[in-house]
Image (cartoon, helix red, strand yellow):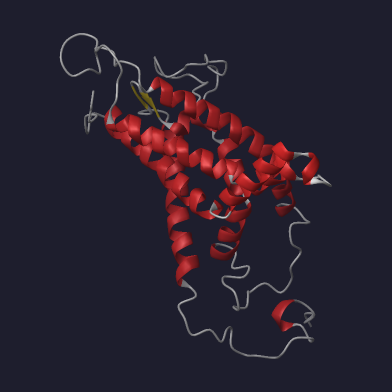
Amino acid sequence: MASTDHGVTSTTRAHIEARTLRQDRWWLQPLTTFVVFSSFVVYATVRAFMGRDYYASPYLSPFYSPCLGDCVEGASDFGQPFGWFPLSAALIILVFPLGFRMTCYYYRKSYYRAFWLSPPACGVAEPHQAYSGETRFPLVLQNVHRWFWYAAVLVGLVLTYDVLLAFRPMPAEYAVGDGETSGVHMGLGTLLMIANVAFIWLYTLSCHSCRHIVGGRLRHFSKHPVRYRLWTWVSRLNESHGRWAWYSLFSVALVDLYVLLLATGTIQDLRFF
């Protein structure tokens, strides 16, 4: 006979047959999370393995930045040290931002509830009879989140550099009209990349690990006024960490989709000057 000393079926808990006594649509939030997050995973996976249509000068898809593999001309601003890599260049870099998001404290709550039903909502019994937390494989790997945060900062710096490059004049083959354009380029793609990098930084800097890095392990804040100011600022950002997580997820996909449509000739960049 299976043990009943775990979770809501424990002998020390009240015996209630119903899965939950909640009368609201508690299932709506985990279902929405499941659909949206699954859609992003499918889209990102397809785009990562495509290995093409990720660059439309001067725009580079964030899925392929920095482009370190065998990339199309103009897409590699840091060289191609992994030019020998036989698969898509996106697979070289995506492991870092993906690892940062998958181990994120907010995303853990989201996919624990939406995918593993552990539990699906507050006051709703989970189907699992045992709970080991994040002390065993594979969930123990969540503890590397802080190291992925350092990698996410580097990725954020590279994406910021991409925004600066998005102001470059377009080459003749991409320009509307004859010859190479002059002056500063500003198009709809530039604005989308600016918004994306802003959300990326808000998400990265509002991270719980960032909050601990700037203000953790201190006995007296009064002796560290600079770190205290940083800690209070990050703490305010941290209150909306979940919001920045979703906004940055949507903005990354939107910029990639825009670059895809430009690269395939489906649309033309709306240029302001």
